[in-house]
Length: 380
Ligand SMILES: Cc1ncc(COP(=O)(O)O)c(C=O)c1O
Image (cartoon, rainbow, N blue to C red; front, side, top):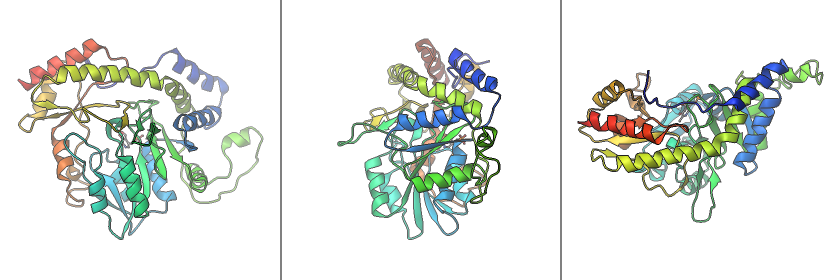
């Protein structure tokens, strides 16, 4: 249907083989592939983190808030330019969202000054998102969380392979700064398995609680009983079923091995976009001169001018066979949040004018040219 679609998985024989191994093993729920995926992800992030594979990133974020004991009466400062999962999980534990705005039209990451301005005696945590795989200002955000004694939760849905640099830091993986961080392996992510996620922490006590929460608070998994390591189980605390599927872990393991190469391919495509888009006057590119570390080029967002009719552009590009998207509709516009959540003027402006162009590892430079030609036609 599309000449150039928004994203495309980069699977080959290796994913098929890994899934086949699971099917041949006769065991579909958490077992060796999941343990291997968790260990490989922890080694990949470094910094002594522990990783627990879960059903998706929303589950990981929900678990993070639950194990941190956040709930009624607490305020959590959340991003304004993000997927609504960040707000939803806050609501699901009974806490209140206070949105922090983005920094500027060039830097769409959460503004540390605005985060600090939103802190009240009820604030217990700051949840950040590294939009499109570009690191937030971690030096300032981690610093203010420490000063105000706030938990730091990183929504790392966009970040596998991205890192943060400051003057004293040679590149620290995103997801290793917070008390807990949450990754997504949804079908359009840099590690794509369909549905899957990872919850990450350095804190052994939090890790133990997360492990219990993932599987009904049970002391052993079915796999332990299958292996004859246990006959029955205890329930040590109330929990949920946020387990990952063994097939997702099998895919995740291979995708992790391919990540660096895939992110490098994304980078090349983004550079081609820069060449083409720099010549289009009514378009600007966020993070064009980014200097806080290495991004992973999760998506290709652009900002249309205030007078451009975005819906007409999307329609025209669709007619030319180019799929586009919006990251993200404003939280304040959703029925569930209208008039119930604070304004964030800069993020709301971006939400009204942002357009996401196709980007995936195996995209060709000629695809970029097709997209940009369609964009130019649409803008006329
Ligand atoms: C920024 C952000 N946070 C959270 C999520 C939720 O991830 P999942 O679909 O794995 O629950 C997404 C998914 O698109 C996302 O983009």
